[in-house]
Every structure is written in C-alpha cells, then in structure tokens.
Amino acid sequence: MKVALMLTCINDALFPDTGKAVVRLLRRLGVDVDFPTAQTCCGQPMINTGYLDEAVPVVRQWVSAFEGYDAIVVPSGSCAGAVRHQHGLVARRAGDPALERAVTETGPRAYELTEFLVDVLGVEDVGAYFPHRVTYHPTCHSLRMLGVGDRPARLLSHVRGIRLVELPAAEECCGFGGTFAVKNAETSVSMGSDKVRHARDTGAEVLVAGDNSCLMHLGGLLSREHAGMRVMHLAEVLASTEAS
Image 1 (cartoon, rainbow, N blue to C red):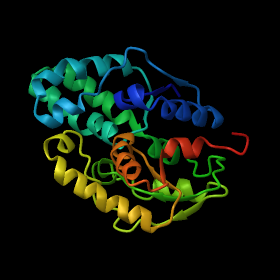
Image 2 (image 1 turned 90 degrees about the vertical axis):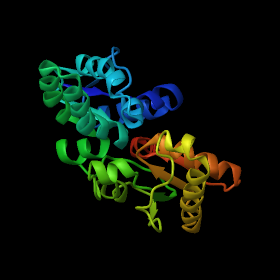
Image 3 (image 1 turned 45 degrees about the vertical axis):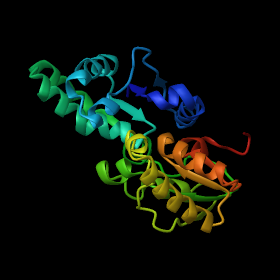
Image 4 (image 1 turned 60 degrees about the vertical axis):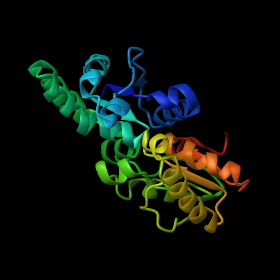
C-alpha cells in the first residue's frame, strides 16, 4: 500500500512535531509513509470563507500532489473533512469534469489519522505508553463531518499507563472555527472558556485532540489562566513509548 502524509498548513508552520509523531507511529506499525513535497494548503480557509473560485487552483495542486496514493493520512479532522466533502464543491463550481473526476478518485483516499489506524490498519493497540491523566476533546469536523465516533477513545484506552477521564459536554464546540475566531472573537473566547472550564474540572494533566487548530485556541486560554494543563495532539500521545 502506497501511503502519503498530508501534514496540513498549521502543522507545517506551527506544530511540526505532530507530523514527526505521525511518521514515527506509522513506521512503528510497519507503514512506509511518503511526504509529497508538492503539497500545499487543502483550501479549507478559502472554502469556508466563500472564496470557492480562488480555491480552484489550490484544489488542483492538492490533487496533483497526492494522486497515485492508496491512502492519505491526515492528522486533522477539519482538513480531512475539507478534502472529502468540500473539494467536490470547488470542482463542480469550476465546471471542470477532469478535476471533478480527480477529486472523486482522490478524496475518498484521505483518512483522518484514527480512521486510518482503526479502519485501514485494523489496530487499536499501537504500542504506546503515556503515564498521565488525560481528557479528550472530539473536534467538530472529526465528530460531525467525518463521524470518527469512538475511534480516538478506543485507541487511547489501549495506551499503557494512561488515565483517561471523560470530558463533560465533550461534543460542544470549542469556539475556534477558523475564521469564526477572528470574526466573532468574543463569542469564540466565551465558548473556549466553557470548554477549558470543563477540561479543568476533570483534573487532567493533558488535554488531547486530533486538531492542532482547536488545541492552539484552547492552549492559549489555558495558558492565560495559568491552569497548569498542557495540550497535545493525539498523534503525539500515540507515538509515545517508554523509551521516549
């Protein structure tokens, strides 16, 4: 199976350790993963803001970078959701049958990380060790657009040493929402503060999620509150071992 890593823009620019963690994890599981250097943004920021015409060349570039792969692993529910559900909108808007065909072929091969681990590789115990009290926030796109369900919880439950505690009101949005946080800052902060309060109520040391965009928002709020709780991408927890 030919597998590629779609790192995502925010991970490439701000959270490169997440990408490194995905590579370590997949190699530990016997997967030889490629990193196509031609990859750029998936176009989600433009699409969400209504700039579908401007997103057309971005989607073309994405398809070109990832064509020929059997699976594309994405450590982000929002970006995986954009590829699977929004690229088709852009291609139809462009009126380009060739792009529509390419999107139809390539999009379904994009898997959010937990989907790839559980559904494609068929594993739930990835050999991780993380001796900390952890609570998990299911991000909106992974929960509602992709329907990842309990896959992340199943993977975390097999991590050795972990103490996984349920997050109250877990399915509520954290308030980030990409440009929503910019256009509606006060509402975004209020929603994030609710999520942070619930996380602190668990007594967890670490707040984990599958999207660094949400963790950036929540981590900033936790930092300003001097909460003593850190945030980590799920991939980094699953990549951890006793040796590390």
